[in-house]
Length: 403
Image (cartoon, rainbow, N blue to C red; front, side):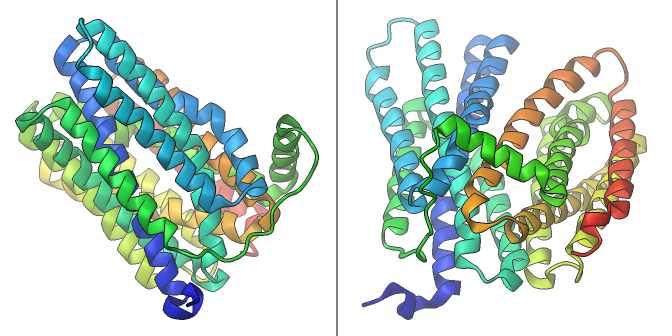
């Protein structure tokens, strides 16, 4: 019996998103567990930084190629293959752990595993983003990107808590086995799903030439190029108020685990609320207005959080910060999906993954050390002002006014 006739595009889309969130849960859980394990075993910032770099840098480098492959080959097979590669690397690590004679050798092998996992993500992420517009009608993309954002926020909220619980009562090997189980479940669900036919790119150019074509296509189009640049700058500006929020809380409000937990819970709660909002509301009629409002709200909230000295008020702004973050991400993703030709979507979303995996480490590398030299709340205020400037440029940018 034909899957398309059985469940319709809504059912196929929800099944696809569910399969990806299951594998994302396992991947996020393991990534958190590896960083925490390194921190607990070594108390070394160098090891923690090494695991963070190995989680992002290979993905950054391979996303260029992953985008080309997502246009050349069936995306379903690429996603399943990437998940399988990650699961096999993780299983090999579990089997090898009992033979390690020293902690330093174990940590080194865990770094190698992190590199392989990151390479898999570099193939998987562009393919996933390119599949969504295959499944969802253009007029519904904003809503279903919002649903996916809400589902991802739930996963990002639950995975660290699960990682902490498993590590507290069991071993790192048991934690890695959870990722293998989620990969099997996610791949099993996706294997049962029939995706719409994909028109494959059959060019005879080399991979490097295909990448150049993709970059030229993206940045010769003022709208697509501008959206990618805005996404990269947005990721960069997220670092002070988002990724360094725990550091600010320790310095301003107190270094208790309750405060740190509250910030994480409220932040992910805001992103989940933002996803629900976008899935039900669908944003403004002009998607560029949704992007502009999200960027402006994000900037104002970053400034407010930098100035705030009341913890309850800070948490309230953090909640709204999460909502604004999801508005921006959903608007950019939807606009790229709608404006990119079907034959180039893999490459464009490969570039989008590259923007995230590249600008985030740069932001951490700049703002982290800078926060030890000047007050972090000044940096947050500065990043908020930069976001307001970006919002005003987006508002005035002629190619965006029509969408």
